[in-house]
Length: 242
Image 1 (tube, rainbow, N blue to C red):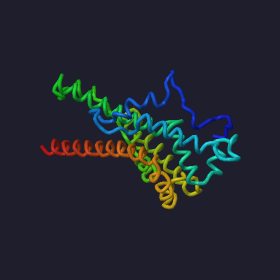
Image 2 (tube, rainbow, N blue to C red):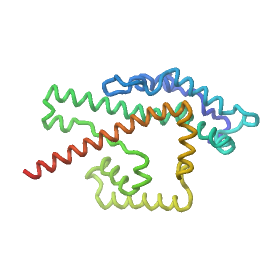
Image 3 (cartoon, rainbow, N blue to C red):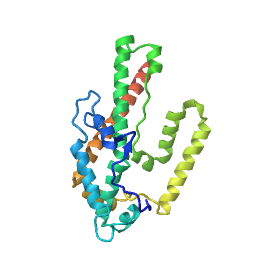
């Protein structure tokens, strides 16, 4: 972030295609059944690039400065917008997250339908063919660091990692998180004042429209996973009671 030669608003190219060209086919038709309103369009991507360029190296005295310098010396609301835009159109992490969630949900749904058609969805083969997906929110890790780490480790490693090892790793993460929190090493969004500033800065801007669209995808996925787990728990209880 301190590299003065880095342009955080440039259109990155991957294997001959820009980030927008790679992601738009999914983000324009984000539903599992490919029928939901777009998260972002090509025009929206272009607008976000323009916004980024109006903030980065656009003010007197900032022309040759680094991204880090901008974050430190821009007006806080402008710095938050620039940081968010960089994650949307240059690093692309936010749109990539939405893209990955949508693609995984589409694949899981299509596979379930194929299994139901070909095998009735009730065979050992379909059981082992099923794609397993875990979606967790950042607030899970900030509010329940140990429990969330255990959930993640159980999903990734299953029984291949001992319960003691998982517990040790989860406790280490929780202790390190608490230590950072106590020494003030927290994210900019921590605290009610900063959260309110984020909402006022981003959600009242066109950026907020796309963030809300992405948030809807994440929320729907989290709710769906919770509902599925509740259903499976009820089935387990019913079977256990017979």
